[in-house]
Picture 1 (spheres, rainbow, N blue to C red):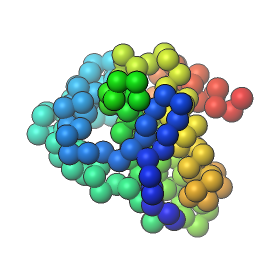
Picture 2 (tube, rainbow, N blue to C red):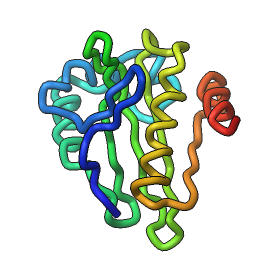
Picture 3 (cartoon, helix red, strand yellow):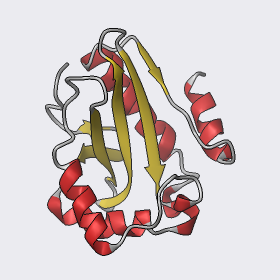
Amino acid sequence: MPALEQPLLTERLLLRPFLPGDDTALYDLRTNPEVLRHLYWPPATPGEARDIVAQRLTMTTLTADGDFLVLAVVRRSDDRLIGEADLGLVSLDNRHGEIGVILHPDAQGHGYAAETATALLDFAFDVAGLHRVTAQTNAANEPAARAMLRLDE
């Protein structure tokens, strides 16, 4: 499986590996109640946000089952980190991956989730050579479910 050679670029977004200075934006994302209500972890402390970013710095290749490519979602118009996106390798043998997108509430409702997911899917199928890519969401997260359904159109 290939590594991410260069950031993924869309019309409005840059999906790039995390950088050491991304911890403040990630802390803001990981402590927002609107984000946390759909996730399975407690709010991050500033130190935990730094540790998460440090971990994310190494998550840039898909070589074995369970690996994740995790990218910062940056709005190009103002260079603001508005979320994170991931492509996980579920099964190398079956060429199966799974995508996920987390966006700050200020960035929701603008089509960024679909734009991010489309870029991840393009990478998954065209570059990583995956055959199947799935996604899942919390049942109460109706906007995320609607965004996923729109990807099939």
